[in-house]
Structure formats: structure tokens, C-alpha cells
Amino acid sequence: MLKAIQVSGCVTLPLRWSLKQPLTVTFISISSSFSSKPFSSFSPIPYPSLNLIHSVNSFTPRPRRLRFTPFHASSSPPLHSAGVRNIKFCQWCGGPTKHDIPDGEQKLRAICTLCGKIAYQNPKMVVGCLIDHENKVLLCKRNIQPSHGLWTLPAGYLEIGESAVEGAIRETREEANADVEVISPFAQLDIPLIGQTYMIFLAKLKTPHFSPGPESSECQLFPVDEIPINSLSFSSMVVTLSLYAEDVKAGKPKFHYGIINKRPGTSPSDIHAYTLDHHMLL
Ligand SMILES: [Zn+2]
Image (cartoon, rainbow, N blue to C red):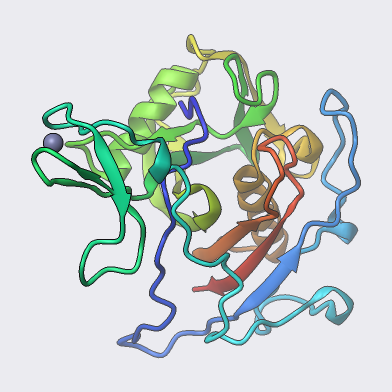
């Protein structure tokens, strides 16, 4: 379960890499356009107003809503050292830290004044499952903060020693008491502002049984066109489920990569305060 939003630094993203085989990719940038509604109100996904991007080969384009972003242009926030100054003591020897830019680096670091070790901060990986069962998606209502009472896919932080797939299966078991088989990766979504990367897998139930785990108050299957898009817990869930709804509508799920750039100063509950940049479909 994703228990807290951690500000743990910034992702430095490789914005160029080579693909061994020619693939159809689309680079896009989108903004959420859902109107704000009380989180308690359940609304069907308004397909016509979904502000999503479409592979030019697979979807009917909606030019009015598209804003293409050149691949070389980064709309990520500038590198920052959020949280570094909160590291007051060394995690290895307990000595006091100083905050400085080490030789050969560009970022502010917390450096131990006794043992000299540097406390590097790196992004967290969140893993989860998008379970489609008889054309319905399994969602869990969060029974913990943040975003208590809002809906999410079963997902949480990857643990040391487990693979992303293992972590996604574990989180699903913990939050929904469901045993699943992972089918394929569905989305990797980076959120540089808060130092998180989401890896969401498509999965299916091994048996048609599920129930809320201790961190969920409710688990429910939603038809894709009735997902409570305005009562989701995080922007990452809005993006994931909106992309999935579009894929279902188009007849085939794809693999999506994108960068969720949260609007600085917004809270996790401002689920529509983002743009999805560098969206690629495979
Ligand atoms: Zn130390």
C-alpha cells in the first residue's frame, strides 16, 4: 500500500534512447480537464471529455485537445534538492551533516561531518496491478492516509529483494486479498516532482475472490465506463485508468510511458493538477 507521499529528490530522466526495432510511438503532452467534483460523488468516465492522447495509428485524433511536445524538450521541473536539508544526521554513524555540493557533482547533498558519507536520495518505485475481470476493473478504497476514502488500484512501494512483478502481486494480495497472474506491463509513469516512478501491470484474477485487506475499506469491480474518475486517490491513478479506458475503447491495451508533472504547490488530492508529458505508446 502506498502509505505516504515521499519527497525524496528528483528523477534525472534519459530523454533519449535507441530502440532496436522500429516502433510506433507518440510523444504527447496532455492536461487533465476534468472539472472538480466532490470526491464522494461517483461519476462515470466521461469518454468524450477524456483529455487523452492517441496513437495516430490507432485512435481518432482530437486535435483540439492535443499538444505535442518535442522529444528533446523537457517540461520537468528543474533539478532540485527537495528534502536534502531535512537530513540532519548521518544514517550510518549518527554524526551531524553539512549541506554542500560535493566535488564533481551539481546537486546539494547531505554530507556527514564525521565519516564523510553522502546521503544520496533516489526515487521510489510504486508497483501495482490493473486487474480486468469480466470487463470490470478492481479498485480498492483507501482506509489510510493520504487520500483516505478514495479509490486506487492495488499498489504500493516496491520492497528490497523483490522484483516489480512480485511487488505488484504482493500489494494486490495485501490490499485486496486477491491472487493474481500478471499478464503484461501496462504503464510506467514517472513523477519527478515527488521522486516516484509507477510501474503498473495488467493482471487477471486466479480465482474470482477478493475482499478488503487492512489498508482498504472496500474492494469493488467497476465497469470501465463507470470508474469513479473524480474519486481516485492520486493523479497516477487518473492517468493509468484513463489510458486504460481509452485502450479498451480502441480494442487493445498498449504499453504507456509518460511523465506526470504535478503542478508545483498542489497536494496529492489535487488529482487533476498535472500534465502528462512525453507520452509514448508501444
Ligand atoms: Zn557518518
